[in-house]
Amino acid sequence: MEGIRTAHTTPASMPTNLLLLLLFGVRVLAICPPMCTCSRGHRAVDCSARGLAILPDSLQHNIHFLNLSHNRLQDLDGLLNHFDHLRTLDISYNHLHHLPVGLPRALWDIRASGNYIRQLEKNNTAYHWNLQNLDLSHNLLERVVLINNTLSNLQSLNLSHNKFWTVPTNMPYNLEMVDLSHNYLLQILPDSLDRLPKLSRFYLHANRFTSLSNGVFSRLDGLQLLTLGDNPWACEDEENINHLLTWMQQTPAKILGCPCYTRPTCGEAHLATRRTWHSAAFTEPPLGGDAHHPGHRAPMQVVTSGYLSKSAQLNVGQYPSTVNTSGPGEQVLIVVGGFLTSTPDSLSTQSSTTIRTRSTKKVLPGSAHSTSHQIHICSFETTILSLLCTAVILCAC
Figure (cartoon, rainbow, N blue to C red):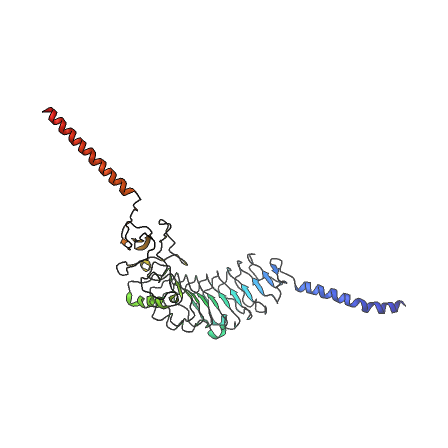
């Protein structure tokens, strides 16, 4: 009987033991590195700012998000290629001198800003068909080699705060955002932007452009925003700058930091039916013009730190400006140090716009009446004194 009971109880206890084994195995697989924090079923791992010099052990192979930023990592070559499910990798602000070799091909987002990367070779991104966002800002990049066909899903490319002298060529054709601000850019090579029909945001501010070749932006049919501020535009070189100024009049895109203007924004030709070089409909109101607070000066910049040498001065003699006035007062334009400002009240009752080269004071109501009254009093006192002097002389005689 005891043998029979044993035969019957052993099979009954097997499912329980198997369940315990499975639970233990799942717990082992779901372990999180002790120096990191994990979430989303241990598939999102945050190991940032831990002072790491090497990759942590016991990382699961099926993680989706890995943050290794703000550490002391110097070399990750071949250490991440087995994470086949990894979608987002953040290795920014480490001590990397090149993009790690053998990154997972399933990646959607690579963030590698704030390192010491000097160049990007074609093999670094040759097989990343799924990559959508690539951030290599705040590095030491001088050149990048991109293979258009292998980055067919790349939508965002951030190369700001590097050392580029020319805009990279052969950029992936599905890009929607490119940030090349805060570099040393001097030129855009012909045909460099001809195969970017989806590019809608293009940041070129804070560079060293003085002029651009004719038609350089003409093929950017999807362009919505372009930043050109904080560049030393050669506005006196009319032969090379006029075609850019003409294009700005005609483009439907919004331009921040307009070359050769004091206004921070221009473009957007679809928002106005009539435009001229000096029309108020072409740009924002003059900088510093605040009808409610004449002493308040609006900031000179929108995106950048306002490069306002030659490119921001307005030649009043060459481009006379008019401003529509409303109400009984006259709006006076004052040229102060080469910039155009405005004051709301007039010094007369005429409804005209004038240009003055020095500041003026507003005449307070009633001041004219008081001045005239004082003049009459002075004349009456002078007459009395004259009569008294005459009487004294006659008495003396």
